[in-house]
Length: 283
Image 1 (cartoon, rainbow, N blue to C red):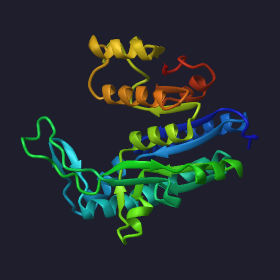
Image 2: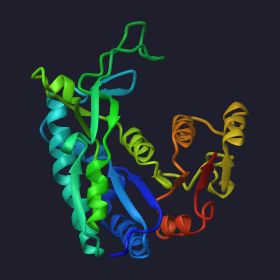
Image 3: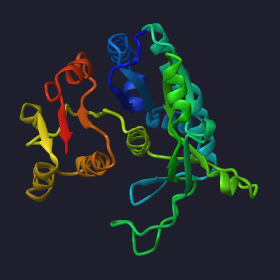
């Protein structure tokens, strides 16, 4: 594959993309074409649907508070099996099939993602008491050495979103694995790498003026326009935390953040012509 002298990029997609073989194959073939042209990609995947499926088959009822999943010990065990096992192998296999030299790594590998247990928090709609989310991690630090080492060798890292206790705490004999949101990990890793591009694949083709009409996609937004769009109610619901996270990452040195769908041609089209297929956010 390519010389790796071109742009650096983090691509995040969820377990829903992995579950559809054709969709996953299309995405990784576009990554392979861009890699051949000199891009260096890190693929970061979730695994929500696969975890839900395995929990159901094992007869483990999801524990929720205020609509949010709590990661208790049995849920963490399933999450590890799914993210570092089934989903990681499926993504690596698909990427290898597309001609990429893909290597599956975990956030725990070489301490790439170090985290602490998220403290209990009060959430709207979940009552007055703070909720303890169990083994859900808050990122402390991103270490990019392993990713850069793989890039230098011509490999494409495939990162799952498990984090691990920091070395300082590990020295005290506390070494815990944490479940972390995939958008959060992808964003933090992109910021740690100061990547040229962060691609966030969602179930919509970008930021929409009307969330129910995909023809209202906004091709490009800068920081000021994004804040105005949140203020005036153009950006609503689950898109708000995504773009707020994006603004934070632009400040941390990520070159451009793209929110795009997983339809065929979206990634390559957006990479070659920012704003052509999704919404590109720039400082």
